Length: 395
Ligand code: AMP
Image 1 (cartoon, protein in one colour):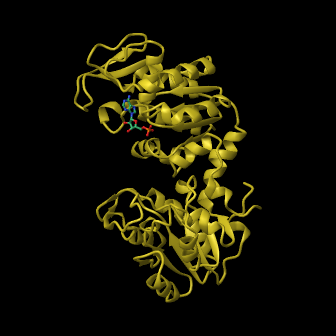
Image 2 (tube, rainbow, N blue to C red):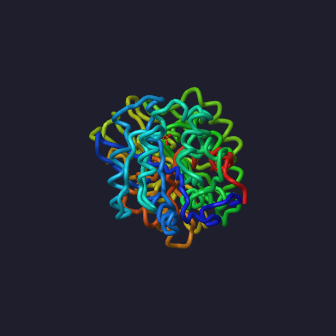
Image 3 (cartoon, rainbow, N blue to C red):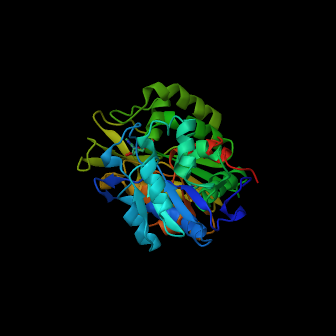
């Protein structure tokens, strides 16, 4: 990476501002998935080992749209972080202003504080200079470790980077290493898997990957749009009618590189308990039925395509994995990736649903890298520059 990182600076006796990604799912008062909190721990520990004057943590959570929304408070995150660090973590109920200032001043040597949701202020998403300036007053060095929001140009990442020395944290560095460096110059064969609901959100990533991979395996609702573009009757399946032309173009451009399922698990309703059957991909769907997962033959077919690959990237579930009856395809693919990791492949899972599916299947420790960012990881796969990264000091 051509950007400076925490390894390039000394933090001793400094007030360090750290932007983390604590945008975690919450159930009222409780953190439902603490993956992102755990992912921030190495950078926090790295800085604390150098005994800074203080370490001030910032994050956004959800989309409060510039207002104080109590359900989107970061308060429940502080005790979870304290547990993983085995340290006290103070919490300030606003990220700027007198109370935050005095709490930061009152911290013991190397004390930690988490500030309230930056998006409670409208200046955050507007990358407002004045708001960034108020945040900047808290520290002398800025570390950005929030990969999940690096595709946004907001005050707490880009704005702050423009006011003081700004470097990447260890998580941001690791994400870039896997999702950008590895993929720019991949070990071959390089195979990608794409799933999820829609083609339209992933056109750029399909085009970018087609230029790089030996094979692109498609699953999920997205496959239905490609099938419909080929003239197959998909009955009640999720098909993006407005993306049919694009799908046809992509198929033509891809020649034989883009592979579609050879069978699908179809159902007579969008329901975990619906009647289901496995249908060959050559056949039209019966009226009233819809495709909700890839079928067992496709799991085997895709596993054979992955076998022997040296680099594998996966983004998007193979079916409606939220319903156990239609999670088999996604879990089967997660297993195939785990097998290839054991065979020496570098396996990378893009954030969001596919990452959750790998966690659910208990296979997270058998994947080389699971990204903490959904949107940011897609933009990197598309070959885009992330503003949050671009704003950091060059090496
Ligand atoms: P995305 O955000 O585009 O990655 O889409 C993820 C969503 O796609 C998940 O909520 C899945 O339930 C959904 N999905 C995957 N396969 C299908 C399918 N065959 N029909 C409808 N939705 C699907």
